[in-house]
Length: 124
Image (cartoon, rainbow, N blue to C red; front, side, top):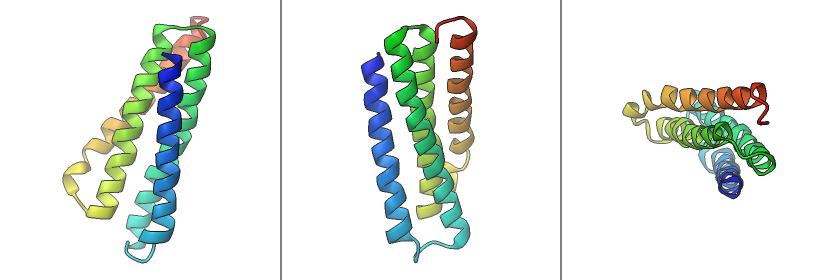
């Protein structure tokens, strides 16, 4: 599973950097300041958690545990839901994406909690 988390971290990191560049260059003249802030928050959280996924991959390679896999799944889902929903809200103003954002945030929190669990249990 460590290779999966490395691929996911690298892919999501690539996409969030590309998305951030798109927002900074192509969208800055088309979004309101509030929409741009929302877009940037989604990008920033995606980038931070993509790096964390790579850390999960390294931990999983060192000591494969169920907690590492829970962290990998949760972080991957969280990035897609949190970042994706904020991007959709800001760019397309599709309001029904609003309730998805907290679900993504919850998934990110579960990923962090799984890492804490792995550390407490000695699997990190």
